[in-house]
Each structure stands twice: as structure tokens, then as C-alpha cells.
Image (cartoon, rainbow, N blue to C red; front, side, top):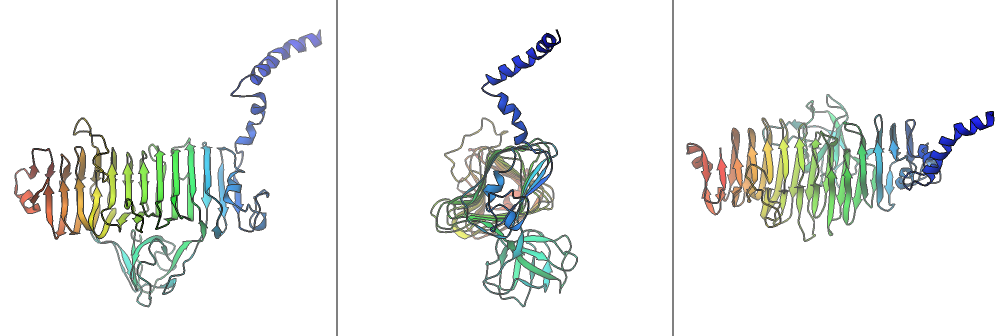
Length: 498
């Protein structure tokens, strides 16, 4: 009787097991192996050029993995705890690194950490002392001089300067340009360096030469730093240097992304990053490509809290956009955005479809074009007015740039400073400072129903062309402000107001 009772007790469990073995989605064996696909404790894996992918990779040096791909393959797909991959200095020539199909659960994080090292300049030295420091003043970028140096112009662009003494000790900033004795910074130090304070020029000492692809990574937490890449240099001769596709979390700190100059390269490409409220954060990131420096498509909101420089140059024939936004939402506050193109007929910033860029105080946004013909500082049509749908109402912005209270923007050396050339395109500078310097043809160009609003803004313009061009007609800012109300519009719906 006891055996019969035991059999009757086990029958439901046996039947369930039998059902599971016939389920094509969840097998009995698969259910038993589920523990292999999630973490149960914090872990750190190591990558080193002296390592071997057959190692457990839980220690540094010769006990580490040889490739990053080898370390990634050892990770469970569900990350429930703090998980870090530490990468030793060196140049890693492994094929394209792929990080895909991870779920970062509550309490979990996934961090890829490299290291910073001294950069050896073409001329001059990597260490020195400050002669003078100039903080951000209005639309003028911060910078410092070191008169003992003999640097080669722009050789330090995209590298980092770190203060090694004084009140700003430990603070690191991206260098956006340099002369023989001075550097321009993406944004300023929180404590002004004093004469005699020391610095060093740095670059990530971990470099991957064949790019990185991240896809299908999602976080269950409404927080940043769930997926973090820090202190890394990634290069690639052609294609995407760092590409992100599908997910809701991405953070980057002290990262340098550089594509080849002679082929179609994109420094940073982000597609379908749906972060709400904000899971995406860029801090001190340099992105350079011959076709596009940084591109965001169907993504956002993406917060730039510590600076992003998007730069394009090179001999590749196509495009040449510094920063591209397509159906994306960018928020800049706390750190600066520097978008620059050095290609004829290109855009420093190209915004298309339903894209928005909100600049907050006291951010300095810098847009530069290198004084080249046909260039545009901020192009709200994406450079191709025939390719994008026109919204049914002007209340629906095709592309919108909004400068909030206290925001500051400098646009320089562009043929057209701001271009709003389609119905629904809106450039709205609500307050703060907007400085357009050396516009070759027009500071503001508006047409075909586009709109530019300058309410409450302090606007300064220096141009060898016209201050305002609307569907071929030229106006001055003085004429605009003399009107009551201060509005110029035409039969096409093109409008500019102040």
C-alpha cells in the first residue's frame, strides 16, 4: 500500500516532466541547465596578451584570457551581480569583438575596464606645468597654456589631459585642439588649475584594432552604468569602429574611437537604443570617422554629462558629418558637445526625421566647419531634404534643436551657421548665448517652411555673407528686432522670430 501511495504521489511530477520533454521551447534538460545562464555572485575576469582562452580567466597575467572574446564567452547571459572584465594594457588585434544577448537584472552590472597611460606626442613632452588656465567664458572654450612645450598642432586632438597636482588633481578632460604651447578642452575643470600645477597627456593604453559590436543588451534597472565601457581605445580601418544595435543601456567613459581616414568609417554608431528615462550616458568620449564621427539612429534619450567630441575628416568621398541624429533624442548637460567637420560641403551636425537635441545650462556646445565651402554648422534637414517625410502639422517637429536657459553655443567657420530648410524643422534658442562666427554665406538660412526662434537669446553674428537668408531673400538681425512683433515670414511658411 505504501508503494502504491508513493506511486500516486509521483505520478503528477512524472507527467509534468513528460510534458516538458515535448515542449519545444523549454526542455527538461534545458530547465536543469538554467543555472548555467545566470550569475550568482560578483565576478571579475581578466584579459591579457600573455593569457590563454582555455584558462578560467579569474586571475591576471598568464592566468587571464588571451582575447576579450574569450572572456565574454565565459559570461552567463543573465547578469545578476556586479561583473567586470579587466583588460591589461596592450594592442589587441583579435577580430571584431561581439558582445550580444545579455540581460542585466536587478543588482547586476557589466563593466569592461581598460587603463590609461601616457601618450607620446609627435613633438614636445607628455608632462609639464601650467602657465595659464582660461575657463569657459561665454562661447569661448576653456584651455590652458604650457609655454615650455613644442607640440605639433592638433597632434593631441582626441587625447586626454589629466591634472597631477593642484586643486584639480585627478580631473581628466578631452583635448579638442592644440597649438605648440596650448590645448583647448572639451569642457573646463571644476577647480581652476594655477600656474605651476602639473599635468600629463594620456590615452587609453588598451587598444582593439578591429572594432567592437554590441547588440541586444537590456537592463531591468532604471539606472546608468549597467553596461559600461571605460578607458578603452578602439580603432578600425573601415566600417563601424564601435557599433551598438538594440538595447536600453550604454555608458562610456574615457573612450577613444577612431576610424580609418580613407574608407567609409563611423567612430560611434548607436541604433535602436531605447533608454527611458535615461540609461545611456557618455562621459569624455572622442569619436572620429571619415564618413561620420558619431551617429545616433532611433535612439534616446542619451545624456552627455561629461563631454562628447564627434569629428570627421579624411579623404573618403562620402558624407563627412561630425554628429548625426536620425529619429533620436540627445540631452547635453554638465559637459560639452564638440561637433566638427573638415570636409567640403558637409555638416558638423546633421539632424533628420524626428530628432531632438536639448542643450542645458551651463553647457558649451561647439560646432565647427573648418571654413570650407558648402558646409553647414547645424543642418536640421540631415543634408537630404528629399528623403524625409513632412509631418502633417507644424506642431509636430521634423527636427528640433532647443537651447535651454543658460545654454551656450559657438558655431564657427561654416558656410551656413544654422539651416532649417523643411516644414517642421525648428531651431529654437530660448535663452542663453549663441555666437556665430565667420559664417561664409549666411548665419541663419531658413526656407521651405522651416522655422528659427531666438526668443530671449543673446545672439552675436560675424559673417562675410548675410545674417539671415530666407528662401533667397537677405535680412539683418537688426531689421528683425526692429519689427513689432519681431517676426519675418513668407508665403512658404518659412519663419524666423526673436
